[in-house]
Length: 94
Length: 137
Image (cartoon, rainbow over all chains, first blue to last red):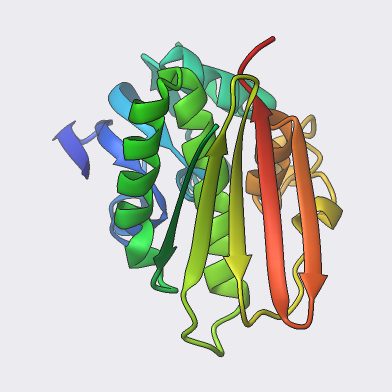
């Protein structure tokens, strides 16, 4: 199960397990993000390279427009993946 | 020693069944949940690579799991594959600024970091990749 909720225009909540089978639907949601955005990982148990690639592409697109994604509430497992990927240098992690 | 084997359709939509198979095995073997998440990541990365690099066949992909007191190994076998060696993929430059980076190669890089051993074999169109992680330090 994976779901993206958008409680307000500048906040996304990732819920469940973000694997490659959800790449297309998640890509469609992330393509609609246009300004400074916070993504809340509190209810995200798992993310694979498919999810990492989409977040990377979205951050790169927003940065070019002068905006950014901030991440919050990463689990220890996901925080370690972000560190190994060097994503702690390209995302603000709260 | 504990082993299990199952074959899966060559499609991304089979991932749910792959994870069900892994999680049943992890539960029986008492694998630490954090280790299980890393093994999920590695298996998904290898499985999706197998699917995407070989779309000219419908042959099923087999996953063999093996657990002993010191290690867990996950072996993926493609019986009709073009060669794709994940151990030869160049590491991405993860310390560069975002505008000097690209996302490609990240999954294999992270998988190698999570594992203790990744072995590739290719013989007569049969491709086998074996990922091993130590569970006893």
